[in-house]
Length: 58
Image 1 (cartoon, rainbow, N blue to C red):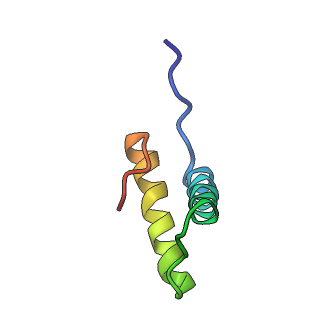
Image 2 (image 1 turned 30 degrees about the vertical axis):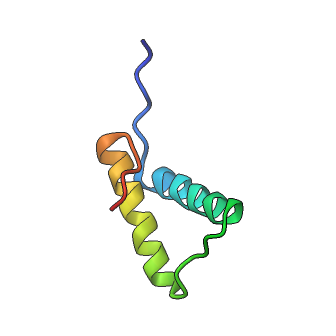
């Protein structure tokens, strides 16, 4: 079994942003109207992916 490459925080944030943008584009969902709140949630997803290997909801 191949071990997953550990992501840097910047890589994980880029992945969380791409994921959340795709998610909102696919469905009836929209981002919260305050961009700084959206960024904090994305940072939480990224931190969880770095720490646990998965983007658990913050």
